[in-house]
Image (cartoon, rainbow, N blue to C red; front, side, top):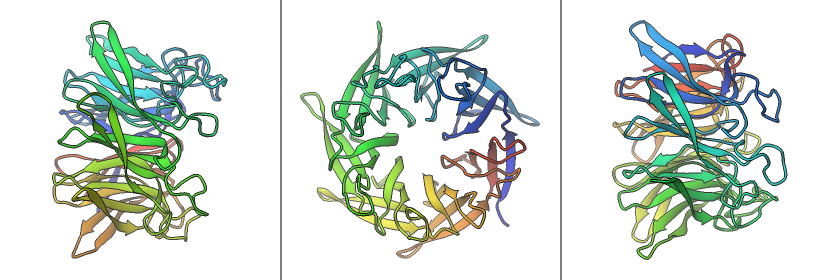
Amino acid sequence: MAAQEKVLHYFGAKPALNPAAPLISDAAGNLYGTTGIGGNVGSCPQAPHICGTVFKLERTSSGFRYRLPYIFKGGSDGDDPQGGLVFDTAGNLYGSTLNGGSKTCFGQPYGCGTIFELAPTSHGWSETVIHRFASDGSDGALPTGSLTVDASGNLYGTTFGGGASSCFGFGCGTVFELSPGSNGWTETVLYSFAGGSDGDAPQGNLIFDTKGNLYGVAGRGGVTNGICPDGCGVVFELTPQSGGGWTQTVVYSFTGGSDGAFPSSGVILDAQGNLYGTAAGGGATACTNGCGTVFELSPSGSGWNFSTLYGFSGSDGDLPVGIVLAPSGDLFGATEFAGSGGWGNVFKLVPGSGTWTETVLHQFTGGKDGGQPPAGVILDTAGNLYGTTFDGGASDWGVVFEITP
């Protein structure tokens, strides 16, 4: 039987539109996400002056009920949440906004971004900004990825710009930690990218291995060539040192060939310590910047072995935007573009003897089923997939969808 797509929610011009980040779910099966625009008219400097939301789809016996836990005002509370959300053990939600917080960022009138907490109360949710990035970007600027929380409640994330070095006038990016204390939260910059072989513009999520090392991706830097004049991007590792501080190591530098280029969605980790991820470009040349790849990095002695698991060709996918690993060992993900209409798809990759086979579970039409999924999918225990599209739907402002295999 073919997979079936069902739209759980159509976004409209009010109060939220164009979701761009991955979903998360709680133990009750409720879904949470963000939209970069939507909500009430605020003080955000960019058109259309509506600053973004946090939304919830509450599971009921008859379907899902749409809720808005928070609407950003665009001032010190933040503006334009582009990353996903994460829960701590107490049920609080944490996320980031690309802009807001400060009044300017590198002299531009939009702010360098915030990290926020949403705490459930008897009257809804209460928002607290736990960190505002400095207007000069010295502690990082423009966070775009989802946060990671450790067992002690510390938060870890990346910023696309800012830091100690300058790339294109906006900094090369950072990895940061936020630690809770009796006087609030303290930010520590764990690593500032230099923009060369070490990487530039880190994006996506971070993930811990069992030894406490952090892994992530940077969308630029690394190998430079005619395909990637600013670098094709890297996968990196941060290792904590016994005397304090962290050491950065480049696990792999993309070349823009069959291996891919421009990783932007972070990496995931299996029980054996293998890393999996997507490269948005490179691979087959049928697409403008290459159609993208799915890759694996396997630890081997003191190094890593790189494998391209699948290279997209355009009709079967173009610009993969994230993957999730099922207990069976299959990989599920989405591409932002694909097919004759270019509206993207949801795919499944099944391992075989030396090769992986792709199955397109749903190809979006750009109509009521949605179009251009921006952030991959999540998987529940029954094998159902959930995600968002940036476009399409009843009002062409995107949807939340479910795919039942």
